[in-house]
Image (cartoon, rainbow, N blue to C red):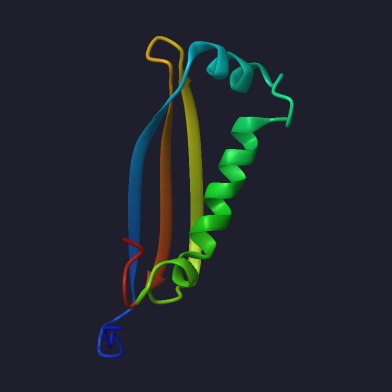
Length: 98
C-alpha cells in the first residue's frame, strides 16, 4: 500500500457511472415496485452505499477512508431498457476515493 503520510488532507470526490440493461418486463417490475422480493431500486441504492463504505475491505491495497458523503442515484430509462446508475463519493483525506 502506498504511504500517504506526507500528503496534506484535501477535499476529494469521485463519480462513477454505468448502466444495467434488462428486458422491458424486468425493468417494469423494478420501476413499479411489483418484484417478488420488494423494492428493487431502493435495495440497489442501499447496496451501493454499503459497498462504498466497505471498499477498503473488498479492493486490495485500498486505504480505509473516512467518507463524508455517498450518493447513489438510479434513473430508469424505459426507452433503452436500462437503469442508469451514478455513484458519487466524497472525503477529506490524504488520498482519494477513486
